[in-house]
Amino acid sequence: MSFRAETLTGDRAEQYRQLADQAAALVAGEADRIANAANLAALVYHALPEVNWVGFYFFDGAELVVGPFQGKPACVRIALGTGVCGTAAVTRRTQLVPDVHAFPGHIACDAASRSEIVVPLVRGHELVGVFDLDSPRPARFDDLDRRGLERISEVFLDSLPPPGS
Image (cartoon, rainbow, N blue to C red; front, side, top):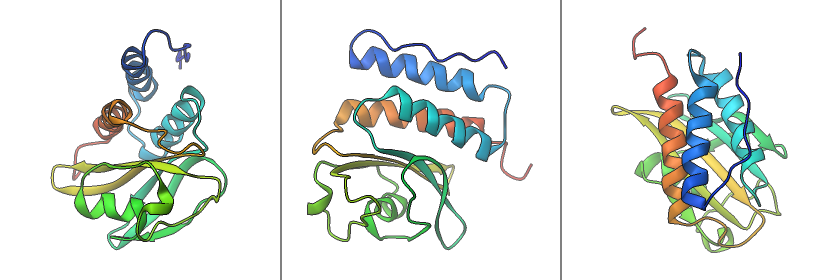
């Protein structure tokens, strides 16, 4: 493998374009979802400032189960519709939460987390899981982060083998 993470430059929009390019290069030619999720979690965790958790939860047909991540130990299982991750999974819409303490049913895996963004991972009509980021800073994530992280989530979904293969 010849991947090398580069320092992000330019404004935040440009940095997300660079990060998406790095993500695509990192998963190129690899179809294993665990390997790709692990590498993408590490890439994003080390690239973005002021994050204390970056990772994946995968849908097992009944609930979300923790997958590869960077940060402190996490909740292992999350029911659909529960907390920010479960809400993103059910609504299939990105959840951008400036203050997790104001989010009904928030699950506090790390007491230091103050804001969160969760991108649902949906392929066709199938829920694959969610991509979750936490920050110790209130209102850390905004619409630019949403767009950038949705693009990185697309890179992950595009790396998966076709359904039924």
